[in-house]
View 1: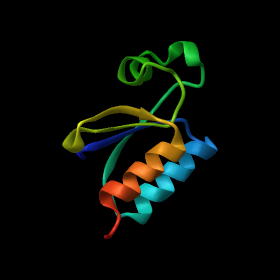
View 2: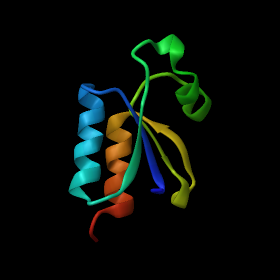
View 3: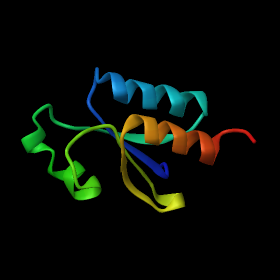
View 4: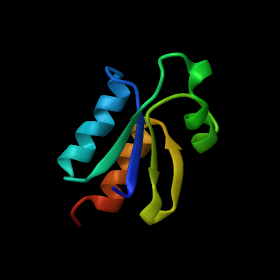
Length: 83
């Protein structure tokens, strides 16, 4: 099991950006596909306080439910990018 979990919706352009960054950095992650209907995204809401995706959880670094693809990508670059 990977330390990073990504909540995503297939075909979501913001999710694809995060997936591309995870792949670029060679990071292993678990992917959880969320339902299309926001009203059915209870798990995402519990984790992040909202129903939008993408959302990541990074247990190793204490990140619980980070949303917004731009913030996630910046976080991944700062935390896992080469120095």
